[in-house]
Amino acid sequence: MSNTDKIVLTGIKPTGMPHLGNYIGALKPLIEQAKTNKTFMFIADLHALNSIHDSNMIKQHTYEIAAMLIALGLNLDNAILFRQSDIDEIYQLNTLLMNVTPKGLMNRAHSYKAAMDKNIANGDDVDAGVNMGLYTYPILMTADILLYNSDIVPVGADQKQHVEFARDIAGYFNHTYGDTFKMPEPVIGHDTGLVPGLDGRKMSKSYDNTIALFAPEKELKKKIMRIITDSKAPEDAKNPDESTIYQLYKHFASQSEIAEFAEMFRAGGMGYGTAKTILFDKINAVLAGPRAEYERLMANTAEIDAILADGAKRAKAIATETLARVKKAMLG
Ligand code: TRP
Image: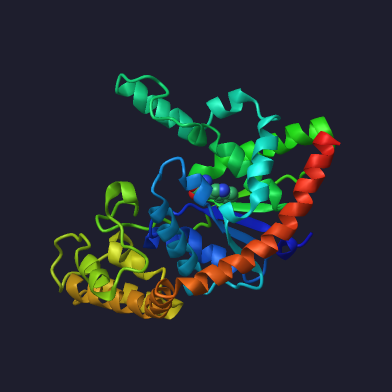
């Protein structure tokens, strides 16, 4: 099988607008890969349910993720974009897979262990605040991966264990019932290097140093102007590799622009204020089009609904086939 024949699948939890770090590290490469590969891309609203209990919020965030992917130019011929909860077969496969999943496997899940550790540290009951949605999260994720016959599952490093669990569970199933599922491969991030946030540390929600992907122009500018720099004077020569401004610029500019910008750092004579303005102009030029399209879609959610409905129809055709195969294997 050549690489482009492989079925790619990934889910994105609707918990808010991604930031530039997510865009550079995950979304951009995914959208690139979807130009050549059949891709299942869904909004994992069922996975958000263990933490978000407000239906309006889930619905709103679901629109945001869908609009974002469409606005970034996701190829909707190769990519099947849908809402996880629209496919009834997922709930069914989840129930069926429960029966070949050892409880001990769930006990080892990093996310569950992190919740327990926090409780222990606080002197609470180990399972305080842990619902079964959180505890069985990896089974639902396995169902996502197996339902659509995925070969490749691009995920962040924090999700790698879940894809390994999917392989384990597929293995237990195949061992018990005969060859039914393909073995999915986790693919962990592309080597995009560190994407620094406003304070120079890795851009991350937990550091509160992010720039939202579709921040309105004014906010984008404000954030960029707030990037922390050292105290070199404009005339001083600067090392671009030590500068957050340059590190961000690299992900948006062409090779020749990047080389030119690096030279301006090294030569001295460019102050950080000027460098920030150059960075802002570049990011804004790249994102202004998608941002306008995003805003247009968010004001026309019926259009998003139509795209998601079409995706659901295409995803369901595959899901029906897989589920029939599994039911036959398990129930005769
Ligand atoms: N758990 C993933 C996350 O939190 C989202 C997700 C749900 C997913 N189902 C998936 C990712 C299946 C890859 C494959 O980011």
